Length: 507
Image (tube, rainbow, N blue to C red):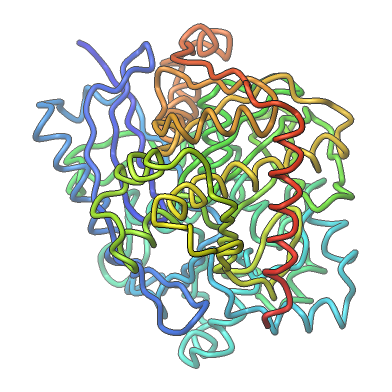
């Protein structure tokens, strides 16, 4: 019997289910977008029940379309938008509030008060993270402060918090069950837990000092597990979307999952994912390297009882989301793929720069007071120049991160592996190589986020026999080499830095 591994990819804008074969190739897939909810400027929410229903829909679509039976699926791995927070009731399965998305800035005032009371170092020393509205912990505190029923139900033990993978694993493995008692597995993996501002990086456990400071009871929190767990976290429900029992035994936050899918298992290897946001991770091995240049220190992954692998990370809030904004808010393009054609109608950016600080600036600046601007406009500029500036903004932001990463790690990047939907944009990839002055390498399978989750599950069950086997699966599709002269590169980057300065102090 031919077997596959399934990956549920719970992204910021859509859910996907993909079946991978033994060679890491996609056998079948389906995708469904979910609503982006913007109640106020800077606020971003999702409907958790819609995410669960859409996850069921794409699973069922793949099962029907492919003709694969449940006993042909070896295991299930899950990857997810990381810092998005859900708080729900164990007995009913109902969320107390919409999921608060990682991009949401509503907790900015709370974060400033935490810094004022405890100091930035108190949190960064324990978590490797700056105090920011980006992370889950403050979002959970906001729900407890603003949804009376959630706070009222805490003593009963029925209030659960989780990032999106926790929410879906809970439903897949049991959900609210019968008789009003929740039977789903309430777990998270170390990579997702490291994005909450609640886990201690060194101990890989929830930190009581952090919980007390932010005001979150430990009873709400999921159990922290390895990313690859041969003990499994339960099986899918017989009457759930798979219509059968399949082990659920791998989970990784989306960016760590892309690192895993790119087989960046060696210290010094890096990848950049171009999706809704843009996220660059550098494997630092078993060493916790504290950034002094605006990067995050995070858990990369943990395999069973092995030591955790850590990373330096640079996070960019708006990348592909800016293309979506051009399509949905301005109507300049009808489909996201049209941005490249429009950008190619001009020879250069016409001295136009787009700083997409819609949710402030993330790494390496960490400025919540920044707002999006288009700088350098003249009567010469047209929509082609703006389209080009949109794409180039991803490359400039990536360069800012790599510059900080080189300083923190004392390692000069020799090349950069890339993945995500935007890497099909050849104009962007060539500009990225030019502005970094290093080769850019795209793999044959660009869905590396989902592939990483599949690898995690398949390693746990022995479907794939070790990391060396996975390394053999990886293959290069295309390489872009830098061709820009250094004086041009320096001039463009200087103008970008000027545009960044103009985006600050808006709030």
